[in-house]
Image 1 (tube, rainbow, N blue to C red):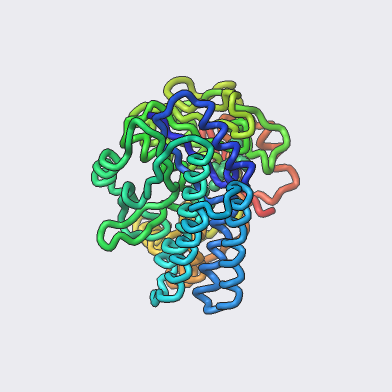
Image 2: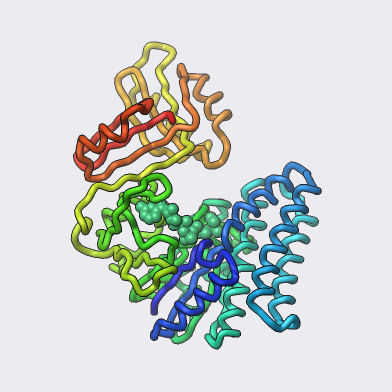
Amino acid sequence: MRIFKFGGASVKDADSVKNVAEILKATEDKNIVVVVSAMGKTTNLLENVIAEYLKNNTATCNEFVTTFKEYHLEIVNELFENTNHLIYQKTAKLFDKMVSFLKVNKSKNHAFVYDQVVGYGELVSSTIVSEYLTEFGLKNELLDVRKCIITDDNHRDASVDWKITQQKISEKVNTSGLSVTQGFLGSENTNNFTTTLGREGSDYTAAIFAYCLNAESVTIWKDVPGVLNADPRYFTKTLLLNRISYREAIELAFYGASVIHPKTLQPLQRKEIPLFVKSFLNPTASGTCVGKGDRIDPETSCFILKKDLVLISLSSLDFSFMMEDNIGDVFKWLYTYKMKVELIQNSAISFSVCVNDKFGNLERLLAKLREKFRVKWNENVTLYTIRHFNPTEVKALAENKNVLLKQESKETVQLVIKE
Ligand code: ADP
Ligand code: ASP
Ligand code: MG
């Protein structure tokens, strides 16, 4: 069994979907689970639908819904010559379901509404891909991932219930055929509402299937040649990493190398399932293999950055030191307001934490912190991480930049920079 994951960029238009079919046709192995993401930037578009809906901006919300439908129908029109093809009914049914949810829903719980709506990106995309593969001659079964991946009800960032998921996946997946399913989604066990695993979570979906099926390998198909030693959106000179150990890949993903979702690697490492990161534009090239063994080949420094973070610096109001009790409170509130902690640094009288305000709770957190601490903060900061650094590179990176904080260990240096 192998697991293939095709992300948004690999199914962004009709030609891309055709390319996916070609890639699948070229593989001899037919025992494959194909995990697909929403097409192109659909998830962002649906986030706009949700935001406008919750603000009761019906007209703007409807405009975004129309864009969503038109985008997919254009792809469908290009892929299917027969205007009576079943795909038209299938996509129309999904559009209707989404719209009727928006009509009947009474909940104002943002995270809940988000999951019920955003999932249509993956549901529509997988339906189109599955139908197109059939049309192309690749017999396949469309699996509803919500019947396979069972989670808690922590909407937008759900945790997998591995025991039930293992059981469901073993029951539902035909291990001798080609299955197509949705990335990113799951469902909670009480009311079967849709949940999501966090943005960019489809890589993780692939790993969940691989783990539960004891797969031979996972391949994630990307618009880059593999894992590079630096984010190509911000660095002009990059180097392809041919091999990386699980440990190294976990570190890179954790620090923000967004080419692999950070939760993907540990389930694979546990069962020593290799992960291939390959280019869908050049499918025969070898790409990157993440597996057991040597740290990184070729040996090189790696540059990672995370943007739009907030650096918060605290000191006590009552001359107490920043010790267990104070720091304990800080962490309790960071957890309450769902802040993702990227870096911490403390001294006797101050404590700095760099966070990602994923859920827009900054104001509330700051208000809480002000009750106990003197609070300073900086928004829109960037966290640069260099693994296996050399001092010259660090110096060059920091040149002419406003470095707010620096932290160094044997392997890694991190700089918080106000751009
Ligand atoms: P998809 O969602 O289509 O699966 P992503 O957009 O999540 O793909 O991941 C691919 C993107 O990750 C690349 O286009 C690239 O801009 C970015 N990226 C960030 N860091 C790296 C890196 N170290 N190596 C390769 N790509 C990277
Ligand atoms: N479609 C989701 C997102 O864009 C999940 C994914 O693509 O991995 O975040
Ligand atoms: Mg993505």
